[in-house]
Image (cartoon, rainbow, N blue to C red):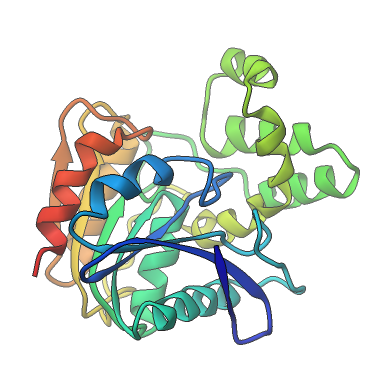
Length: 265
């Protein structure tokens, strides 16, 4: 591990593996560079690329400077890209995909962009996310009720069935999820306005210059697949790919060949 410094002085923890063109991986909610899908994905990509993983601010070994703003996370990613040589391919999953997309639209030097299931809600195939969910989660964290914060996010943000949410406290990873519960409003800041069941704006990401691949799992719910169809239609030149048999918990071995093919020079 080493660190880079974001524009506001926040220290961001970064790992590097492999060699070749730079690829930066951006996590979604409740994940760190040591927890979630990225640790198993890195070795599958490292034979082809120099792979950078990092802890988003407030997680793992990274710092967290108040007040939070989405622009600070874009600057964090920019600092990682600078560490990678000033430009890079970028892969983002879930809310990390939303972060990566916003970074590309802000003009960061992203050569190629790959997005997996950015959790937008663009129609009535899923209820909209409650507009006050950020406030509910923030209040729970402030009251020291981190378990409640995670369960609120999983139930009302991710739409995990209540019976499964009730059992989550038995998971071995539960303490690690609670440890980063305070960052859930950061993830929601990138997506909640696009989780209200409205069509995606036609020109919102018109400035994205990176070659973009939008990926959805073939077994994911209709609302997610519909959202990725819609996103591919509004990002200039974007290609759409469906990973048969996959869900939001995408298997790295299924995803890696798609990323390798897209990022190949």
